[in-house]
Image (spheres, rainbow, N blue to C red):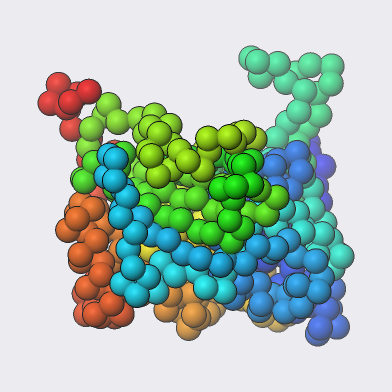
Length: 434
C-alpha cells in the first residue's frame, strides 16, 4: 500500500509550462474567492536543475501572467541590443542585412535569459500563492481509475538496489491524485509518451520531428563581450542537406551561451552533432569570441520541432499535455519558453472553469478551444511551414522561407506536412561517407 495525497490539480514538471499552469490557476481561484490545492512534482533536486536552454525570451506571455514581473525581480536582465544573422562557409562569414530578415529572426524587445533562473523565480512566485512544489520526486507511474481515466501519478520507490530489491532504506512511493493531472515534462517526457500511445493522441497529426540542441556556457574576455548581442548562424559545419544552425547569446557578466541545434532527420549515420559543434567553434569568425575564454558548463537536450501540424491531441480523460510535452515550440523563432508559458495558462483557465462547476476526471476540451482562439495558435500557424521548407536544404529552404515569411507573411494557402519520422531518414552505413 502507498500513502496518498489528494489535490485539485496535479502538475508533473516544474518547467515554464508547469509553473505557469500552477500560478495561473491559483491567481484565478484566489480572485474568485476560492483556494484550490495545487501540487507540482519536479524530478530534479531543485527547480531548474533539469532546465537547459540557450534562451531568448519573448516577454509577451510573462506580461500576461505577472504584469509587474520587472518590479517583482524577474531575472530578465539583458535586453537584446543587436541581431546578427550570419551564413558561414568553411572560412567565410556573410552577415545578412537586417532589412532582409523575416520578423521571426528579429529580437527587438526580447531578453537573453537563464531559463533555469527564470524557473526558480517562477517557482518562488508560485509558492507565494500557495502552490506546493516537491523537488526530488519523480512521477514514475500514471494512475487510472476503474473507467481508465487518469486520476493522478505515483512517485518512484526509493531504497532499491541495482536489481530492484528492497534495501533497509526502502520507502514506498506516494500516490498523488487530483481532479485533473497535467503533464509538463518537456520534450518526449516518459509519461507523456505513454499517454500519447494509450489514448492514440497522435492519430490525426503528422509525425513529430526533433532536433538536438548542444549548449555551452562560457565566460569570455571583456574585449569581445557585447551584452545584448544575439548571433544566429546557418551553414558550415553542417552540409547543405542537414537542418540546423547555431546561436551565440551575450548575457550579463561577460557570459556567452553558445549552442548548435541539429535536426534529427539527417541522412548520414556517421554525422555526430557533438563533433560538429566542437568543429563549429574553430571557425575564424566564431573562435575569436572564445580565444581567452573559459567554459563554465555544458549539456544537451532534445527539442520538439514539428510545430502546429505535429501537435497531438492535447487532452484525454482526466488531464492534458502542456509545453514541450505536447510540442509547443516555434522553430522559426528559435523560441519555446513563451509558448510553454501560454499553453500552461490556457490549460489552467480550462481546468479552473471545470473545477469551479464541480467537474473532475473528464476531458478538458475547452483547453483546445482556448488554444485555437489565442495568439499562440496564430503564431504557430504562421510558422508551420518553416521546418518542412528548411528540410529541403539550406539554400533552397532559405529562399522558400523568405518567400513564405516575407511575401505571404506566414499566411500561404497551404500547409506542408512532415511525412515521416526522423529516424527513417537514415541512409545505409555502406552508402554513406565517413
